[in-house]
Length: 162
Image 1 (spheres, rainbow, N blue to C red):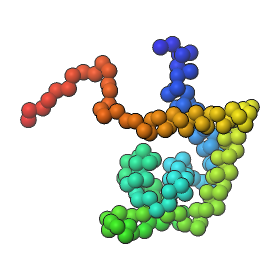
Image 2: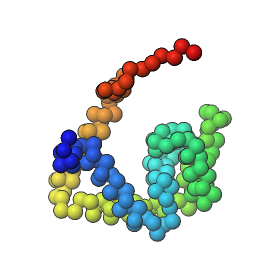
Image 3: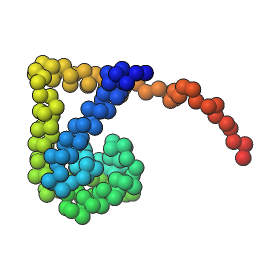
Image 4: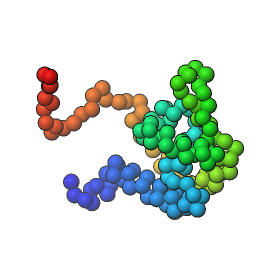
């Protein structure tokens, strides 16, 4: 596939735009002293306070041990607290502390600045249409998941008889 065609390929374009948005946001957020991983945890917790560690690792698409290390740092900094899950004594539920709220307010403001930069020159209607289109794509992909992954040109699987 020619490179010029890839520039208009949905997957590549979404990846590139998301990467550039994160990079620009990181540049703005650097002054807060948070890593991308840390602000991502805080932002997702703001969206789903009371989530357990395992579910948050799934949402963030990271390994649970990686999340535990991030949470250890955020808890030590006083931004996150772990509480026992009343329904599962092995699990911990995650909550933001009061200290985290001013940082989150600043993160939201930086996010708004970044989004405004990204959408400069687009009319209100174009912005709404873009968001509606992305929501439709998200819904399409959320509603259907193939029973088995499709891998073309894959080598045949060998069965182990050990």
